[in-house]
Length: 121
Image (cartoon, rainbow, N blue to C red; front, side):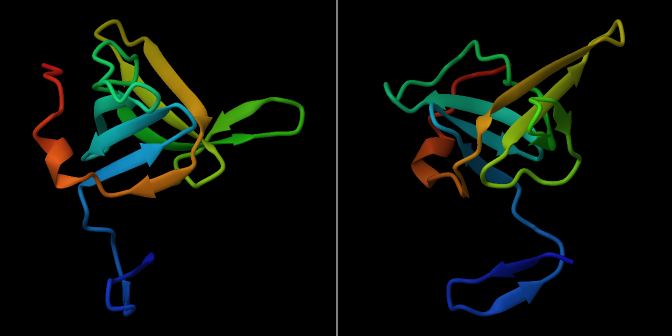
């Protein structure tokens, strides 16, 4: 069971109920809802990146990088300090994967950002 901390410092045990997260790496914010990347923002310019390869891909988990450089995807939730792994299987059953740089933080999206997400149809 996962424990989360509430604003009043109480600890709640149980399944994570939030549906939206912002995963921040060195250069980008990955906005995820229901484990799908719905928006990507460039941190330097503040602009939404409408053609990023992570868009519409499923957040599978983190990535474990070994000292020899080998990266192995993990199905565990991404942790700060590790890359994020997004994937998509197309109609031809081919996998298209995206691995980000190291995760710096995990937050909730600002309410004003929710209405600014670009159309990813």
